[in-house]
Image 1 (cartoon, helix red, strand yellow):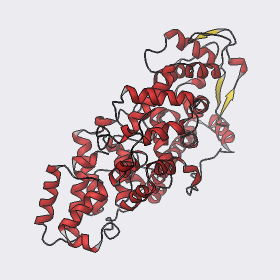
Image 2 (tube, one colour; image 1 turned 180 degrees about the vertical axis):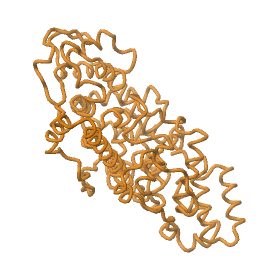
Image 3 (tube, one colour; image 1 turned 90 degrees about the vertical axis):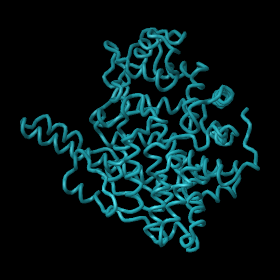
Image 4 (tube, one colour; image 1 turned 60 degrees about the vertical axis):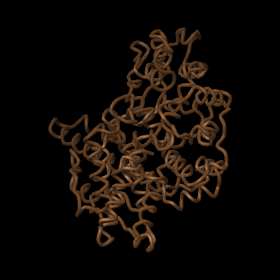
Length: 488
């Protein structure tokens, strides 16, 4: 078992670290609330998110379309010119829904009601990287997102079974096109390589046999639902990872999870996402053993991870580069301001390299230091100015590549107002340079700035005459642009 963090090490810095990694940060008073709870109860509160009512309903269009069959028939019967116009209109509608979906999810992250649930949903989105570019249905992308949310801390076996039947995944990895005469190997391969085992832990023969076992799993494009078609299933014997018989999809998943590597693979991915990229053998062995002993229940493993002393080590705290989503949502939460308008928020994430529902490939985003390039760092600085000063101060090139129709533009456009300073600092802090410096560190970093960054910030505050609202905004902007702030 991993050593649990000692109570005497629980303080503002460690509580802020937990809230940053198991959520999207928060205000100083939210951090202090976790400090008062103590480490075990703080982790439990984040994990038991089901006890908190979910205040944000699904998008209005996120439900089966009863007219879909009629519209598909009308499309088939239409003349060529009319068909093209119908397709263009459908594409515009889908793009509008996708924009709304991205913003809906960002609002869930920024609300802070169930931070760990949304952070895990983001983890699963990167793990089972599926893109709208091929699925072409915002409804199916929402369904997959909701699937990740509902099973965020559930059972790994159950989640794998559900993902195998998920309509977006069936389209994304071509399982919907697979049949006994022509088994498609894409999902079978990625199921082992990217989702459960990793390269080197299966053979090409295992891929072929798994693909045969998965035949029969199909997609009903009218109902937009998974459907099992027995006539398309290969009923003959297969040999997969050492097991022989008339295997089906359930057998494939069970046989994968019977491999010790499956638990090691998943806990390594979890540790890399929540802690750092270099998990020690002791950490992986302990978490993998717990995952297997729990019957692949995720919640107890996460409880152990977040309470472990290793999670709060110097090698982990403030050593991970914030992803673009984390940078956006954490800044919004710490500034206690509203999200930027949808077109702005989604364009910012695209510029910073993390377009939600559009991962770059089946492996998802690389993460880590790959988030930082000369261009994306400049864009982070521009966006920090936009959040603090509003649009009159900075207008980075945030226009989307394919604007929606006018009705969509007016619905989702909006002017960015400056951040309100009064909820952020007390009158005493706003009137005293030393107190303001300490308040900036506490609110945005929960620790001390590095010497060079601290010197630069103190110089700005010292030369600001007078210490007016503009000077305070400049200090906030500078804090958000420090190398320290790019780390979490």
